Length: 244
Image (cartoon, rainbow, N blue to C red; front, top):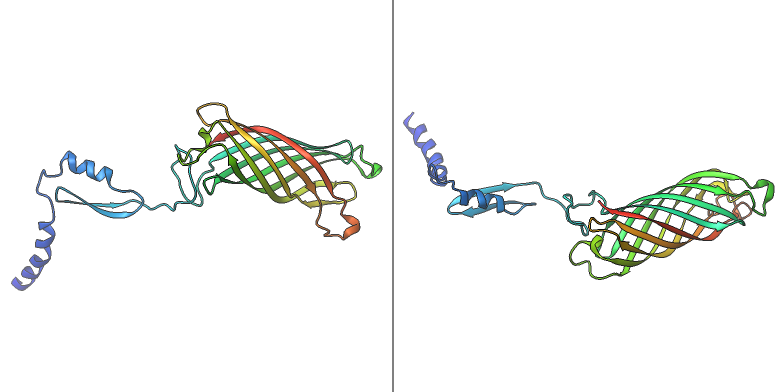
C-alpha cells in the first residue's frame, strides 16, 4: 500500500508544481490567453502560467477580402456578380444572358469564378429560316480574370480599389431546349475570351462591372462537321458586384 502511494506521489508532484497557486490567474494571464496565436496548437507562457491553445487550424489559400472569417480552399466567395449580356444581331440571331458568378481571388490579381447562366436565344430571323426559333437554356462556365491594372492588392482588399481593368477567358457547357444555333445540337461547348473593368460604387464593396467578350457556341463536332453550325458574335455585358 505504501509503495503504491509513493508511486502515485512521483506522478502528482511534478504536475502540481507546474500549476499556478490559487488566485494567480490574473487579468494579465487571461489577456495572454486571448492573444495566443490562432490556427495552430501552441503553448504560450505568461508569468509562469502554462497556456494551452488548441484552436482548429485553417489552410491559407489565396487572398481574402476584409470582414471574412473563413480562409481555405472551401471558403466563401470574395465577390458575387450579377450581369446581363447581349450577343449577336438579327443574323445569326441574338443571345440574351442573365448570369450569377461567385468568385475567389486565388492570387494577388487573379480572380476565379463559376458563372451560372440562364439564356434566351432569339433565332427567328436567321438565314436558316424554318429551322430557326426561340430557345431557352442554361449553362455553367469557369472564368479566369487577371486584373492587370488598378493598383496594389497588398492591403488584401481588392474591393476597395477605385477601379480595375481585367482580361478574362473561360470555358463551359451550354444546355438548351432546342438546337443552338439552328441546325446544330442542344448541348454545346461555351468558350469565351474578353476584357472589362470594375468601378467602386461605395465603401461597402459594391462595384459596377462592364465587359466585352467573344461569344462562341458549337458542339465540338460531336455529330461530325456537317452538324456543327457554330455561333460567333461579340457580346457586351454590364452588372454589379458585391464583396461577400
